[in-house]
Image 1: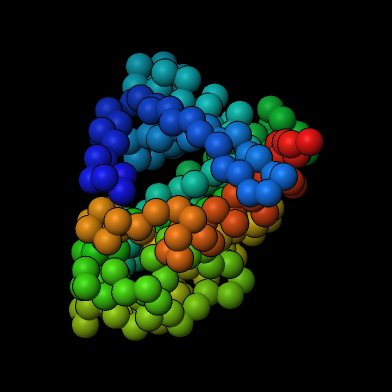
Image 2: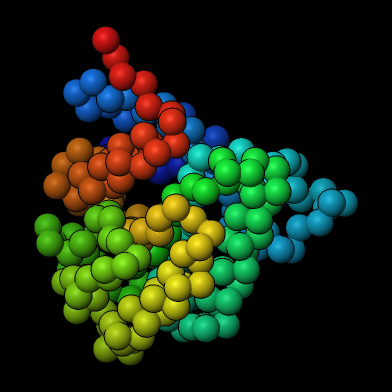
Length: 218
């Protein structure tokens, strides 16, 4: 991605898998990411050919990253939020039914396509908040929120995220948020491990021990 090479779009009804590791000092996290095309999970059923084991993959995950386009959320508000909450409740209930106590996993919500509601120049500023992980309990008044287009309200976005957190806090071990923008990442050559990406890496390293998936190299 720093070289401008972007992953291909995931076809509808499919899961694209990416593998890698995150390491710091003696801690190493083996990471596998399954990317989907963004379909609503509640639209699937047992006879749906578009779901080649997708929900089974969700059930087996040790954490969920849920992508919500910022502009869509601000335009559609509570109507869209209700669908997103229902989908994540379905995932939590499926995991609880099949895995018991192992179902209590962290959730990170990626507020994507931020460049559609925030000027791209503002997103590339070091203190914009891009890729920085925020707690669902302490949503910030960051520069990114202050840079929202005049057609949108920062207070409305924060209110929507608070409603989201309140509705799902019993279904996940933690709920966090992160802003993202593909053009800003590519044009500013942002990389994990640099100033913009440190929080995201720390999130993985902090949550991994709770899942029992950390390897400590001798």
